[in-house]
Amino acid sequence: MCYKKISYIEWGVVMIDDTITAIATAPGEAGISIIRISGKSSIDILDSIFQSKNGVSIQDFSQRKMVYGHIIDREKNKVLDEVLAVYMKAPHTYTKEDIVEINCHGGIVPTRNILELILRSGAQMAEPGEFTKRAFLNGRIDLAQAEAVMDLISAKTDKGFEVALNQLEGTLSKKVRALRNIIIETLAHLHVSIDYTEEDIQEITYPELLSNSENVKENIEGLLKTSETGKIIREGLNTVIIGKPNVGKSSLLNALLRESRAIVTNIPGTTRDVIEENLSVKGVPLKIVDTAGIRETEDLVEKIGVERSKEFFNKADLIILVLDASDELTKEDREIIELIEERKAIIILNKTDLPMKIGEDELQSLLKEKKIIRSSIIEEKGLMEIEDEIVRMVYGGQVKSANNYFVTNVRHKASLEKALKSIEEGIDAIKQSLPFDLLEVDIKDCYDALGEVTGDTVDDDVIDKIFANFCLGK
Ligand SMILES: Nc1nc2c(ncn2[C@@H]2O[C@H](COP(=O)(O)OP(=O)(O)OP(=O)(O)O)[C@@H](O)[C@H]2O)c(=O)[nH]1
Ligand SMILES: [Mg+2]
Image (cartoon, rainbow, N blue to C red; front, side, top):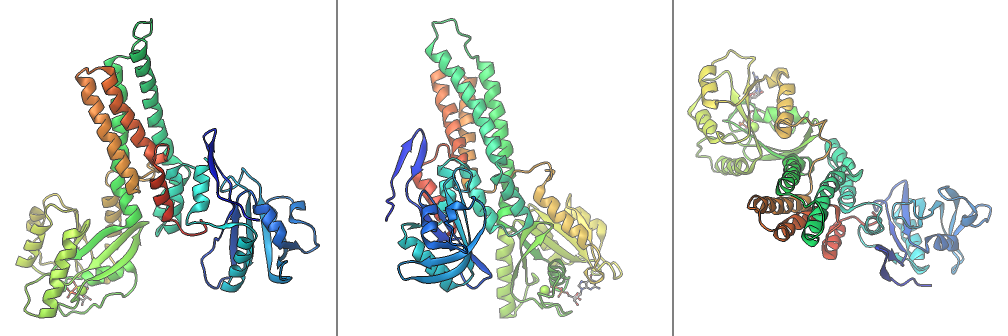
């Protein structure tokens, strides 16, 4: 029995005829593994390989009920494993198709043997992300929601997970759809105005067009504004700790990490190369780099370290400059302060437990508007303020709890930028009172670009590319 893959479009719904299977859990030794089957034949396949304890067919049990039994290779008359199996009927399932899940013993042998048996029984091996792709093609979720599934799995921080979960629940999609609805109404009115000029129909006016389009434009800009934070939530904020030697840079890294990662000594030039670490500050993921103190040096190894520090400095999103309060401002400090003038930076005045020598007035005048945080890493003071400031820098002026959607995906960002460009061109055309059929093109382009986010207007090859990045069994 083999189910050939035939897809055809019927009433706008893609019907998929073949049944797919994959191991849904991570490979290797584990308590249990789960093998998934989805498609028309999944329940028949389970029936043909599963024997419940009392010999009753699985189909005589109600759906969504875990049934205890064994997987039997009937051809070889061999028991493959002791399992719990469940079936779920379409359409209220992950893929909107009939789904089977078999919980077997975790381990390479039982999972491989059961998977092989399912394949022999007529299922096809699923491609990466194919279960989620079916959920999309069968209309249960849109493309942005499908992408959120992958983000959920790969999220490294609580915040990343929370944002992905919101996206999965459709927060971003809803916002985009609302904008598309405004546009479609405008387009409809525009159409009528173009096609039925002779008749007694209220034509859309230029001021009306302008106000609708500007509303759309502002909303797209609002979404795009979240993308900088969105990128950080997804990929981490590139942060670099700089300062002259011996000010406490490595001590700060260790304090933020809450472990002794970098060597700390009172010898200037202790850190000779960059040290990279990932950490989460109140849910904000940071890719943080502790650098070799920047100074003129003849030591070759240290020289290379200083050069590498400068490279990291150049590409950082956020700079944490550490200064020593117990020392006077030096030429090195002044040079570094000059370097960060145009950059997003947090200034830390460390070693405040020692007698102050630094000229604070001069320092503040050099730093202009930049905020100075006092700390004594050794006495564990100021760390909370530093963490709060990092979070504040990331969210900018935005109140994070009020904003539960962020554009985290570069594909979405590109589509929104395209939509923005089209609506801006449309607005220009409206302002010049160009003919309706010319405006219509720009407004329609904006509508289509927004549709790319939710997958309403997107090419098949884009869809294939997106799902190819998923893991197998999802
Ligand atoms: N009194 C005092 N000493 C501190 C403080 N923070 C760090 N130190 C000490 O300052 C010295 C240098 O600290 P590090 O963290 O190694 O400094 P660094 O900036 O990484 O130094 P290099 O790697 O050499 O550039 C160590 O002896 C620390 O214990 C502080 O808040 N107060
Ligand atoms: Mg150091």
